[in-house]
Length: 270
Image 1 (tube, rainbow, N blue to C red):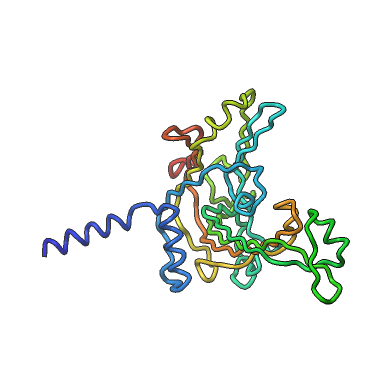
Image 2: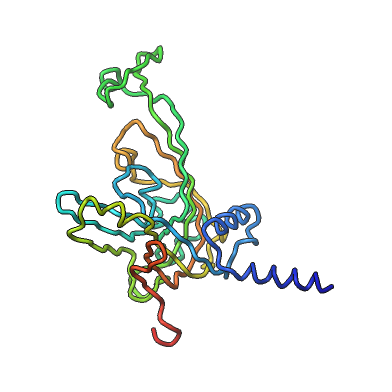
């Protein structure tokens, strides 16, 4: 009997701990099969490493934490910049009821890419030769075929309401885009400076009326592979899953040191 009580107490304690990125992703996967299992009301503490913003791939493009270094000016820009969930880039926007919600900022915390070699058809062999100087292959119909890559991206993120007109799921004083400039940083110090730097998000999973609570769909709209990768020979397909959330605190950390923080003021002081 005492063993059962102790086990139940331990289980309750573990359930009260904030969800990290891996636990939240697992909970979202479970909720895709059983919507009632969505972790509504659960606290989270997610750590997102800063990535080199010059990399031309979808996971970097989706990341809300990026750094960009200007080698001519010896200047480092630290960028906190979430994306958005809109009818232009999300194919289930109206069917899942997102059109009835405030504008949603997307904080992607897990993005995985799989690349598969493939063949693309082009208008003619002359164009095929022009595309990165690859060797065209005959399709038997007179069309040009050239080797390329299909990129399949699977991402998980938080959809946080923010419309700039009073509705905000972000800490007070924080806006969807924040850029911090570190000037006169020598090239030799760059890697040491950005190594271990991460964005920490703390808050609570909410439900704003979208159906299902964990909502998934495909990326769509005016984003071309050339914009992401600089290469016409890469085709990108992206599947995205989100939960709505309120973020109470945002912290930029490096190792165990907090470099910047946006906390939500105590209740009654907003």
